[in-house]
Amino acid sequence: MDYDTDKIDQTVLALLSLTLHDTTEFGGRAWKGHDWSVLNRLHEKGWISDPVSKSKSVVLTPEAIEESKRLFDQLFVNQE
Image (cartoon, rainbow, N blue to C red; front, top):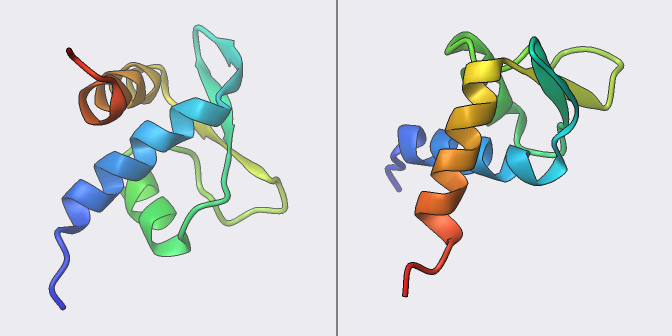
């Protein structure tokens, strides 16, 4: 089966907003309990810190925080 990895990446980025904590003007942390290949692609795109570490969370850039919240609203909030 052929997957649209960009859509998968956007969905995971949106879901990272659910566990966002310790936010500052420099970014925020989110638990990294998602597929490693997706996390690696998000890192390559510059949205998150390197997921390969002993830490149980990744750091989202300030831009990634805004985008994750926008995507979450777009994908999951009822607009009725």
